[in-house]
Structures are given as C-alpha cells and as structure tokens.
Image (cartoon, rainbow, N blue to C red; front, side, top):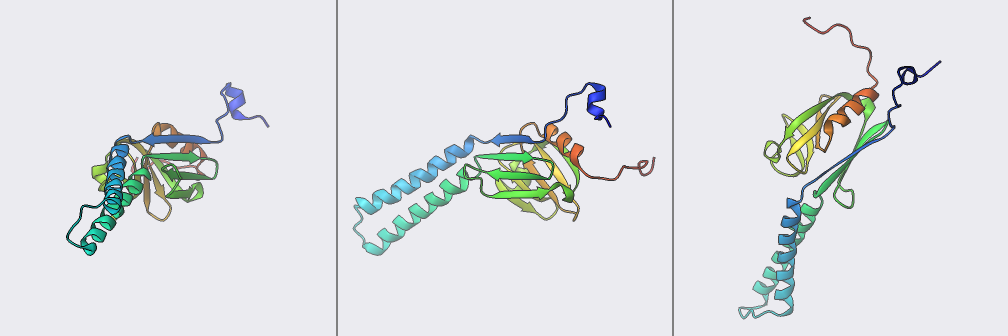
Length: 184
C-alpha cells in the first residue's frame, strides 16, 4: 500500500515539532534580584549598621531572600521550549527546563490557536491556574496554543508559530472521524 503523501507529491511531515518563546523583560527583573542579593551581601560584609546585630541579620536575610526569589523566579520564565512528537506535548521552562509539563496526545480532545494571550489574562507571567480557564505557561504576550483535555481541563502555552503547532497536533490526534456538525 502506498503512502498518500507520496501519491500527491507532498513531503512527509516531520515526526517532531519544536517551538520557543522568549521574554527579554524578565532579564531586567532578574537583574533587580541580583542587585538585592548584592546589597544583602554588602551589608553582611561591610556593614555600617550601628543599631545592633538583630536588625542587621534581618536586613541581610531579607535582601538575600528577596533577591533569590526575584532572580530564580524570573529566570525560570525567561523562555519556554515546546516539543511535540507522536505521543506527547512537552513544555520546559527556563534554562534548566523546570518546571516541566508533559501531556500525552491520547488525553487531548482538541487543539486551538490563540492569536493573542496576555499575562494580564492569566494574572502575570509564569505557570498559572485559573478555575475558569485551566492552567497555562505564559512567558510573553502574543500567540499561543490551547489544548482541550479529555477530563474537561484546558492547557495554554505561549509559543512562537503556535498555528503550526496546532496543525501538527491535529494531524496526530487519534480521534474518530467526525460526522455532520451539530445543528447543520
């Protein structure tokens, strides 16, 4: 039996789709975190503090803790990498790939293209959950893809060329052939 792609002269589709999205503003926020850490270290090393040890320790710990939270909290969402193969969609955030989310395509009911996703819709950048919208990984404003899962939940991710990802996923969904549209 011949491959239908060969009969039409079309090139066979690749087995893997990859995409990324980047937010350079996060680097600015990470630099503020580094500055807070530097202030805490400077206070600890060369402190002109004269009001006692307890306030100095609190200031040092506060600056270092705030700096670490800002630094690592923003660097985790500087970019997102999305990989789709014949079995699953995998999302990795930041340089270390954490947090990570893997969704089997067997659990996907539909894939939709979202032309504009904003951090304001989700309450900011990062991994987000909203009861009425599901979960999302939002690293920047712009296009993304929305997966409708079999359990009724939704998963949204911002990624460049999301429309190509949606076509790739739809081509791999194992859905029964659809009958006539409802109400047609």
